[in-house]
Image 1: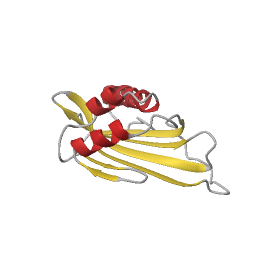
Image 2 (image 1 turned 90 degrees about the vertical axis):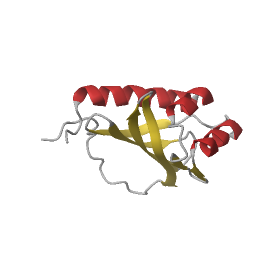
Image 3 (image 1 turned 120 degrees about the vertical axis):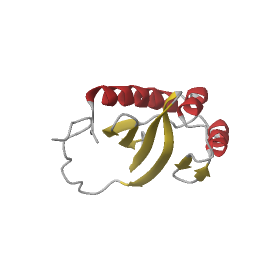
Image 4 (image 1 turned 180 degrees about the vertical axis):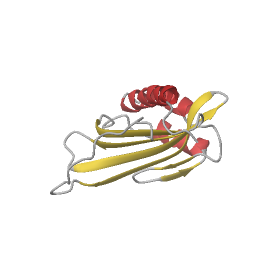
Length: 142
């Protein structure tokens, strides 16, 4: 299996950027379109566990649009072959002392790249964070 094929990394990076913009601007229609419309889709949020596309869509439509802006601190995108990828970010919301983490699994479906599984969690900012490793998003493995 080829890891981080450059043109696949570009495709996933572009759709992930579209997702991130839709999230912070509360573009629910785009967010809904980027999740796989299946009862098998899962989203574990900071305070909710959602099983199936319908539950995820209901959550998005009911959520307040306030406080969605965030600063992405680190991004890691890895692709596996032509049709599977993971995206992981660390983020922080303005005025918060907590670090958010978001992990997504993306799969290429007939209609394009779709999130099939997502997990969001938060943690306290470590008092003395270790030095960060370099960003390796899309770096081909030897």
